[in-house]
Amino acid sequence: MNIGIVCYPTFGGSGVVATELGKALAKEGHKIHFITYSQPTRLDFLNENLFYHEVDFRSYPLFEFPPYELALASKMVSVVKNEKLDLLHVHYAIPHASAAYMAKQILKTHGISIPFVTTLHGTDITLVGKDASYEPVVTFSINQSDGVTAVSNHLRSETYASFQITNDIEVIPNFVDLEKFKKQKKEHFKKAICPKDEALVVHTSNFRKVKRVQDVIKVFANLHQEIPSKLLLIGDGPERTRAEAMCRELAISDDVRFLGKLEAVEEVLSVADLFLMPSEKESFGLAALEAMACEVPVISSDAGGLPELNVQGVTGFLSSVGDVEDMTRKSLFVLDKNNLPTFKINALKRAQEFDISKILPLYENYYHKILEKTASKATI
Ligand code: GMT
Image (cartoon, rainbow, N blue to C red; front, side, top):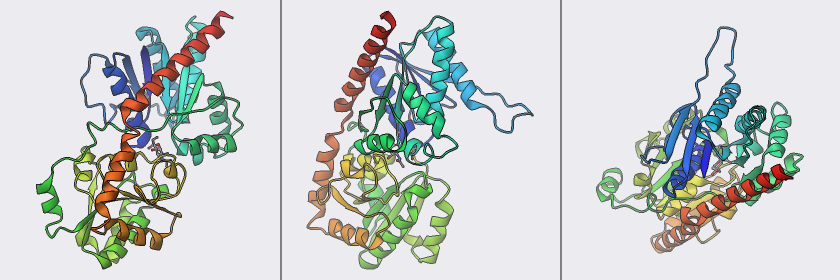
C-alpha cells in the first residue's frame, strides 16, 4: 500500500505512535509518506519505503495566526496526487481530520478518490475536542472519516458519550517495539545516578497539567522520607518550572534530576525501578507501556484507559486521581526488595501483549477493510 501519515511531529504520544507505525509498515514493504510541519522526532531511520513531505505554511502580515490547516490540506492534495497514495491516515483529530476531509473533497474535483482513517488519541476527544470552540468540526470530521480508530476501549466509549457519532470506531491499542524498548545493561549509568544503590523512580511526560507532575513530586518526596531514592524526570513542558520550584521547597532537589527532552528514553528506563503516571486523563498511557517493556512496574492513576494497561497488583498499582498517599503506600510495596522482582517480570509479560508484531496486522487489516468498503461504495 501507498499510505500518507499525518501527525504532530514533536514529542507526544500520538506523534510517536504515528511515526513508529509508519516505520513498521515501511519495513513490511508499504510506501509511507509522512506529511508534517517538521521531521517527526522518531523518524530516525533510513528505509527506501519512507518519505517525508514538509508542510510549508507562509505567514503574512494580515495573519495573526497562519492558517496551518489550509496549508496541510493543500500539501495532502499534492502528495496524494503526485505520489498516487491509496489511503491517508491522520493521527489526533484536531485539525488533521478536518484537513483530510477538505483534501478529500478537493481531490474529488480532480477525479481522485482517497479514503482517510482518523485515529483518536486522547485530549483531541477528552479535553480539547469537547470544547465548544472545536466540537462541531471534530464531530463532523469524525463522522466523515472513512475509518475511525481509538487507542483504548475507554476512549471509544468517551467519544460516543461526548459527541454525536454515527460512525463505527475500532479499538486498536498502542504498541511498543520490544526490540528497541528492552532492558539494556547500563550498570555504569545506574552507578552514576544511584551510587548507594538507591531506588530509581522515573516519570516521562510533556509536563502539561493533565499529567499532574506535581503529584509525581509529592509521591517521590514521601518515598524519599522512607527509603533512599532518586527521581529522574524526562520531557519538558508548561509545568516544569513549577515542578522544579516544588523540589526546592521540599528540599529534595539534590535527589531529583530534570533531564529534558531525551531521545534514548529506553536507556534511562533500563535502570529504573518504578514508573509514575498519576495523570488526570490518559487514554492509553504509551509512556507507561514503554516503561513496562523495560521491566519497570507502574504506579498510575486509574484515569481513562490506564486500567486496560496497568493491571492492579500485577504490573504495579492504580490509585484514584490525586490520591498521593495511596500512590506512596503502593510505591513502597512495589519497591520492597521481596516484591520488586515479581513486579518487574509481570510488567514485561504484560508489555509483550502489546508488541508491535501483534498490533501492526490489526492496522493493516483495518486499512484493507476500509479500502474494500470505499471501493465497493464507488462502484455502486
Ligand atoms: O492527548 C494527549 O495528551 C496528546 C496525545 C499525544 O499526542 O501526545 O497523547 C495521547 O495519545 C497517546 C498515544 O495514543 C496515549 O498513549 C496517551 O495516553 C494520550 N494522552 C492522554 O490521553 C492525556
